[in-house]
Length: 190
Image (cartoon, rainbow, N blue to C red; front, side, top):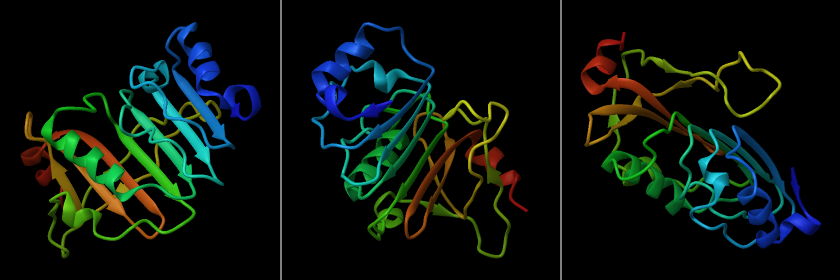
């Protein structure tokens, strides 16, 4: 779906989704600046959301997301959005269903995210496990898997001790939630 013209108006966009059942997958291409969506929008309830905002800084789709996988391709994204996502997941206050976040930016990702979210590190001499789950962000490859995340950095959720791998490169932010506790996760390290 292209958010240009009629659907670039958030009221029309929200009306379209509010009158429909919750979607499994939503693929959006946002070509014009738009107002933020209602935090209760059905867009955030979809199992998978993939948003392309190549020319603009799009609305913060991460903050209210309730589904399993979200992918963003954007020009720029606020550093605080990444920090907020990781910290809210770690506290157990949000993102209970989350499996993965995949963000690719045209501009560089601001440095320092890993330090600000309190990641733990696997010893550099050891091989971390690779996180990958069934792809939910498109229709083309229903049996495919997500982009593999092999990272020495990880965070632990306070409420149930579950682990998420975190990987930040110059233009990419990846966050993959394991169905393992920290103890189980560390047993997989080679």
